[in-house]
Image 1 (cartoon, rainbow, N blue to C red):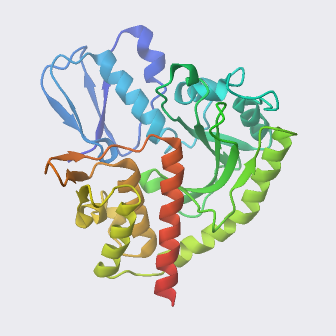
Image 2 (tube, rainbow, N blue to C red):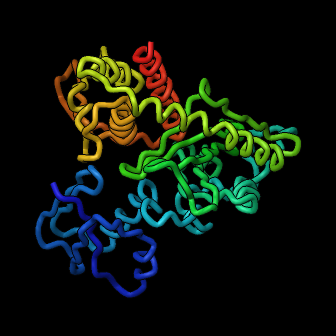
Image 3 (cartoon, one colour):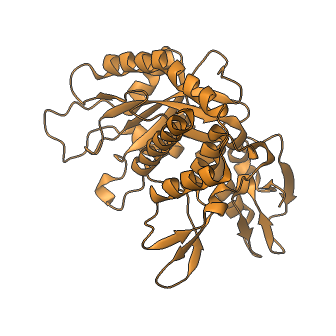
Length: 339
């Protein structure tokens, strides 16, 4: 199915919003009138969405803006996120006080202060997300994730760009946590290196938080070449179909309970783009990471036999857990192949 985004013709007040959408070079653009007249289906980067007759241009625009801001923002132009975009993606970054459940010893430092400090050090935010919370009193304090890249032209290694992944909350569910990340441009995959490969730096909400986070950031930067070396090693290891199946079986078990649901290994391993046809360990890892994190695969309930498409993982906690666990699996496969 061809990929394209829908950009409607809309009232003039909405034009500034539309201009925030980065148009990917390999996407076709379809312009609509103020209302959809027939049923349309589109698949931006593998996510299939149907727009039914009567859907307003404003509603379509809102969905497209949200989707691109959360998943594809800056994929091609590499421009950093300004504060208005950060606020839209992760409002808790701008919390003005700690959550009421926190003790007096809790030192409140707004995440935006950390972001500004890292900006001064040359680390610019390029992605942000925030966990949803059902508790009304915790909205605005929830766990959030920001990915940073250094300002030097966002240089990378081939298709991959090193990143710093920052996690925090103001409701007591997380300290400041810094991990090494790798961002694969071809599929917009944001990976997180496992703690076993590069130690996660944790900074408590006490003491000199800002300086400790900056120090931790540079510690991650000096360790990142290790992740690049392991990535190159994975690229040089070809997997048999049976080995890919073993990898897929282990990967799906990280997200789904095999006693409750069934997920087909072949579907997990089926590439969404021609660039991912190779059977090397690195490419297989990326294909599985995309399917496990972004969903889209069929999941069958073993009791009811009903099937549905897996949703994208929105929880910051689950995103970090699954990313690190998948990296660990890839490392174990590398060890087995190299033995």
